[in-house]
Length: 458
Image (cartoon, rainbow, N blue to C red; front, side):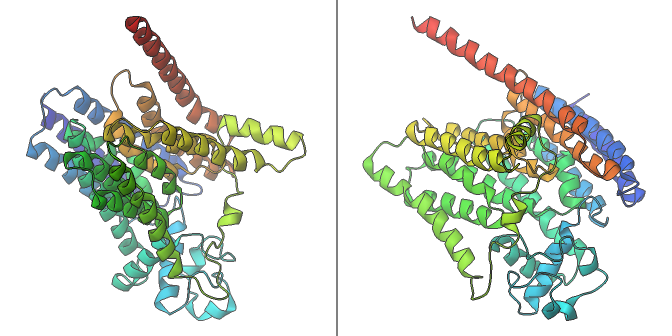
């Protein structure tokens, strides 16, 4: 059977799965088992399609890419009308858009403040989480909420349309990245057809979708820069995109050292490169300046949110138990470990710049992996920004990429929260132990390869 026929067969079966999920109705709290059934079925079919792409020796035709993108559009379209019952974050997005449309700074009042009582309603406000908290989302996300609200007032589906459009744009940009790597462009399926991406965006509408095209666009610019002599516009462009991604959700800032630290030939190139972090910081500063005002806290609920815990991996859990055993705050080890490890990784990038743009792009996966491995508050949609890197690197015997690909399917076990009222320990072990094992195998393979190279040099 040819590649196109395999993809069509997998796509049609996936259509049946997503149609069933859409018709099944609300997933939580007493119907979450249905979600696991549909997700496992979709991931199994997605795995078959992924395998078909990986073993295909010939480059895809335009019709193959149309099949990949066409099915991705339909998959997302089937879940767009569904109520976001796996997460209620979408109601906060619409609420923040409504508040801004009425001339109120979203960082000024919590949602249940008496000053906003005229905006309260049973459709959006009543379903929103943390009504006593000021919004946690950065200015870039808030600007998007306000803009989409003016086009689709008080529309959950309209807000999700914007998120799905961002994902499809990200897929289009990923084609360029894959081509720069000399990879099969049909690998974009590994990103676009992943059920985690489809459920977390088309169903739940998570804001994480917005920074995906920004991050992938930055990767593409990094790869394009060597094609013409590295110039100021490329550095500024990368910095601008990373800055905008950070304004959507703060974490993308950790990608900046990886994309900035590239070996350059001349002093002029190094001077040009300083425009990259400068552009990122200026962009972030302008974004926050739009909302800073007397009596306004632009950090909102963020300081408290960073101390919450959910779906904790075994290693951070051991650190929490150690902290509590020594009468320390449970969040203290993680709050020190995460910036410490990211700082060490970033320092390594600066001391040993990437020898090529390709290496710089691949390095971007490392700080994301660190974040996911040490986080004490890991929701499944936090994995989405690693998927483009998986699409680039997934292959037989690429154990780390395989581990993260598998983790993108297992991480939904965090939704067992709806069954038990908390994320059970067994669910964390099932999610993370295969990943730990494959990462260990990747490390072993790397060490063995380096020893072999050392022997060959001698």
